[in-house]
Image (cartoon, rainbow, N blue to C red; front, top):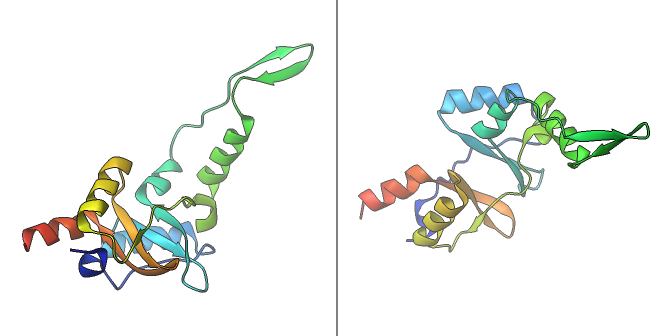
Length: 149
């Protein structure tokens, strides 16, 4: 069985300029745990998940530093702090979404998708053809496919 055989074709998606509030409503209304983020040409540019939304409530990690001759020397990358803050206070999807999206092709086998999800600890993968969103496969889709065999 291939991704195109088990994927959900009617995918709820958002744009990068959608608000986090809109995403929360969609997640709750449709009982889903994440949505792909697409551009105007339907290319997948990100994904926003419950994990991204929960991140907003996490404790801020301040980089460790010491002072030397009235200067601050950071032992960790202070740019990580900036990224954390941006994600925690983000109002738009583009500020909160995960940009490095793991995607699969229409012809990917169910076994390859299950392995990928297990190894990467992800719950869903967008199914694409030449970068364009065609559907989505969730863990539930895989379980349904196995149950129907």
